[in-house]
Image (cartoon, rainbow, N blue to C red):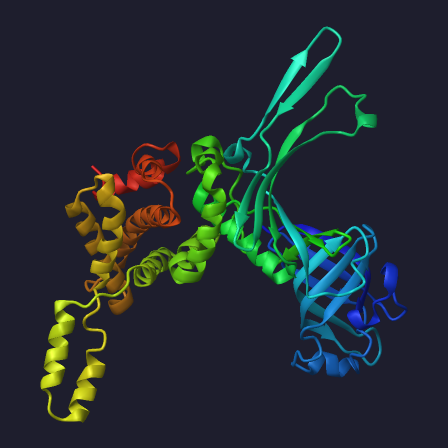
Length: 472
C-alpha cells in the first residue's frame, strides 16, 4: 500500500520569477505538494502560474509547450523547505467564471532542500549523490559496537574499517559508515540508542544533471537486487548541488520492492564477498545494462514488487533469456546457413532469389530450445549439473512458451495444467536467470556453486530445481 512521504502547502513560482536569497516573488501561487512512497508527485495550485494565460486555455490546451524544459520553485509552509520541480505536465483542474480556477500537475522530479537552491539554475549541478542503504545492515556488516560497563559508567566503543573507495571511469564510488545517537544535551535518560548507518556515495568526475544522478541511483538499486537477492527499495537519494554544497532529497517515480529488510539467511552475497571488487562490479553492471539491454531489464522487471499473472511472468523470463542469448552470444555461421546460401545461389531468376532470401532470412538462427540450452549449459555444466537434465529443462521451457504464445494454451484446452507447469518452470527460470546474471557480472564460481547447492538464501530455488528434475 502506498504511503505519503510528503504533503505540505506552500507557494510556488516559475524560474523566470525566481528571486535571490530564496525570497518568494509576489506572483507566487499557493498550492499543495504531495509525494507518495512510489514517487508519484502531484502539485495542485490554487490558481495559475503567472504568464500561463486565461484559465480556459490552461485547462483545455493539451500541449506541453509552455511547460517543456522549464523549472519551477516552491517554499513549503510547515517544514520551511524549498523545492525544485522539473517535468511538469497537466493532469486536471477546473476553469471557473465564478469561483477559483485551479490546475493540477504531475511532476517528474522534485528536489527538497532545507534552504534556498543556488541562484543560478545550472543543468549540470550535481556534485555528489548519496544513498542510505538502510535495511541492508546485515549485508554490509561493517564495524562493531563494543559496550564496556563499570559500576559507575557505561561506554561504547565503535570499531570500523575506513571508508571503502573505488575508482570508476567517470568518478568514484564509496561506502561510508557512521554511528548515530542522541545529542549530548539529551543524554539524561534511562536508555540511549546507537545505530550504525551505511551510505553508498557516487561522486562524478564532473558535475552532472539531476537526471544522470537519478539514473545512477537506479543502477545501484538493480545491482543490490542481484547481489543481495532482495528487492527491498533503497531510501530516497540525496544530491549535493553547487559550489555551496546545498543538500537536497530527490524524489521521482519508481517501482520499488516491498520486502522487509533481509536477514543473513536471505542474502545471496555479503559485502565481504565482493568488497575488493565492488567498484569493478558496479562498473561492469553499467556496461551490462548498456550492452545486454532487455536481457537485464526483463529479469529485473519481475523483481520490483509487481504482481504478474503466471503466464506473463513465465513469458517475461523466457523473453529476457532469449534477449540475453542474442546479446551475449555472437551469431556463428552454421551448416544450415551455408546450405541456404548454396540453394539461393542456384536460383536463376533474381526476383525468386530475393523472395526466398526474405523467407529464409532467419531460418539459420538457433531455436528457442537451443538458445536456452546454450545459456543454461554455460552456467550449470561447470557446476556439475547433468547435461541430460539441462536439455530436458530447456526443452520444457521452449515447449510451454510456444504453447502459450502460438496456441493460447494446450491444444487439448487443459489450460489449468499448463498454468501450473508454467508456475513450476518460472520458479526455476527466475533462480537460474539470477545466477546467470551473477555469472555475467563476474561473481566467482565457488559462490555460484554455493548458491546452487547449499546456501540458505536459495533454498526455495533449489527446491524447485529438484522438483522438476534439474537437480538430483
